[in-house]
Length: 389
Image 1 (cartoon, rainbow, N blue to C red):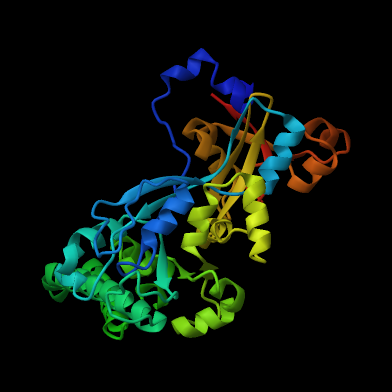
Image 2 (spheres, rainbow, N blue to C red; image 1 turned 30 degrees about the horizontal axis):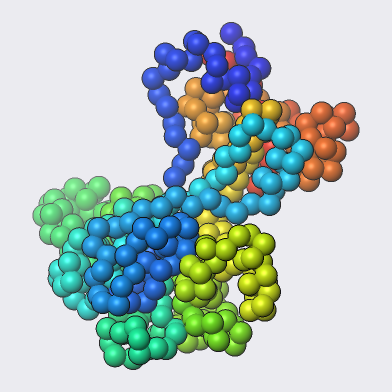
């Protein structure tokens, strides 16, 4: 049986109540890491527009990770909503996790390091908050502000933790590799390459591997395999004087490294203002946009994620997929049965959807395309799936 069905209609059809395999929309978890007292919890509070995370002037005021779901700012969804006027709007989201500060020796359990490193291992990406602001009112665990030193302290602990993981794995499978097990020998060869990098405090992500060997790396859930964004936490004065290039230089990271300059304290203060007051406040500071919006978008795109949209009178929604996903994969994010029974996707490019006033106008102008199983979804596509039950 073939169905031509919208997402709104789908939820109301009784036959689908017996479906067993639900595929939830993909969740992106970003762990906020750094030394104690660098502004992690303050930034988390600003991101999530809550006061839920304790932000006190002493190390380890955060013990259990705080979790918050943050909407991804997307003007495209706003414009689609203006045209469609749906009853409900569902943006893409990022899950931020405020993880307690790491210290030297964390890989040995110092400062509850094992617990905190375990929390980091569950993340898809990391946001490393590095303190740039001065101020004796907030104690620095090292006694002074030095972004490069602080970055290296955290990254050394991540590398040492991964080294323990690698060495433990080699100990477990080394015997089988020596007796001629080719599968185990291949794994040991990959482990040796990763170990060599980590011994030199280089991230596991820097090791070039072929596709098969990369699957071995992924299976290890290494901390240093995760994409990382650096957030330079600055004072109000530094917002006017510190540029991205200077921040990269002070951190000692390559030019292509993702660095965001943000003032966690300013961003937290903004949450108490109305949108109009916030805009005026930023203008007074000569800041064109919220650093949080840049951080959220950077986190979203760090893993190569893109957005497609579904839009109807009941709901307009942004869906998260990987760049390069085909139409059936995109359909599967809504529900696995959409992917299994995929026939085609009626697709309108975002620009055409806006220019011609929505689905009907785009269709009349010949801008609605019927795409098959091999179609690679483009960022911003507005889609309607047809599939077999």
